[in-house]
Image (cartoon, rainbow, N blue to C red; front, side, top):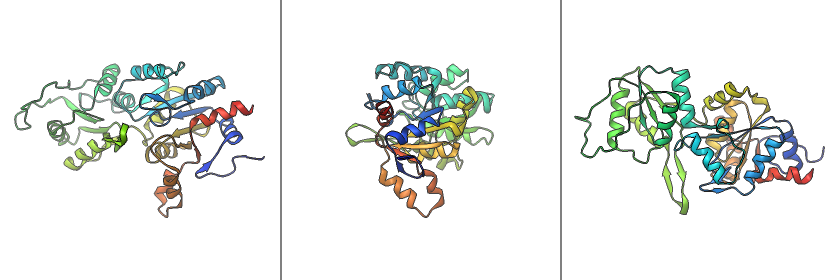
Length: 309
């Protein structure tokens, strides 16, 4: 068949090739930042792509390592940016999945100490997972004399714009107990901002705590398999019939590889084609897991399916 998808590994596909790929899939998983939107601007054509896939009977899910907002706020953002058919149960954030893990897998018997923002606190609250309430004023506080909660049985690290030395020190104290769980919402080292600036991500904060405690965190978000396990347990999806679409090779594409999904890189976000090709040509076997099966300029290329029908 002319234009058929016949090989894998950084294959740039368009038109009939995209159609052939999607015809073989029942489930499409999208990252959000850099794929569906950039900041407060939807990627052109993205709302139409989501609607088209749903009209074709596909299951569409959104898997994001961004833990800064609860799922109900994500629904509001989708609506605000022109996505009119996204349901809360289709959204799997690292904050939500962390709460599910603590409740259903770890079955933590005690409180969680959180380094993170309102998105993490709200998801824990909705899941019924007890946590140490965020302190609004720590001015003048010191690790030498600050109170520690004896009921803490887990430390969860996420993105925290109010991260400080006292939070780090408290977490270190809790993690001296080998039975205290050490979790991270995601490993993202940094996030792009407007004007070429960046902000440290959850992974940077987690690394500080790992260094201070000589312990390794269990990562809940991508590239860990747990996000997909959450989706599979709730919707019964088959990896062989699923496609992961993302913009970050080291998280989105590796996540898909770890979960046995076909993977697609879109070039509207962080990673570039040159990086993917570099991983493909690398002599390091582990780096091959960062290589996407397919590449598109933008998910708006999916709309070519409709144009060609």
